[in-house]
Length: 162
Image (tube, one colour):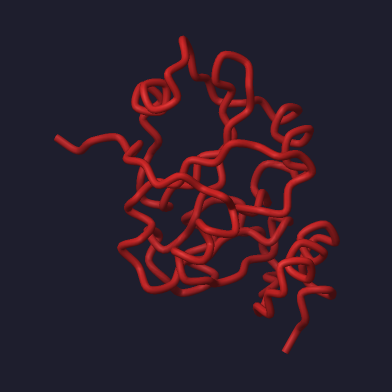
């Protein structure tokens, strides 16, 4: 079994250590950059993947944790935050905010303190999978614990289905 120190991004491995978490980090030879790629590699449903997405709310970064089969409704995020505009962050803002590249952003262990919104649908699963700081690494955790360690506020920000 691999240890977090040998598989995860060093910053994320340090976050796991600081939080006292002993989780298995799995590394895949092919990228798990997208929710679909991660679900295929792991062998789980795409809804069990946690997407860690950075947005700019009136220019201020906010992290949204969303299940892999859903899309973020930016209008619902805007309403939740009480801001004028919400836009998807570019790659530079994602890296400056989290310390990680798009496709490998974990739900916690970031280089800056950022407000976190976690979509309530994540709690529909016993276990969810999230990036461990690189596009090739993931870890599993129960969603309540994951949201707690991320400092997430439970909200409903998924696009509504017709």
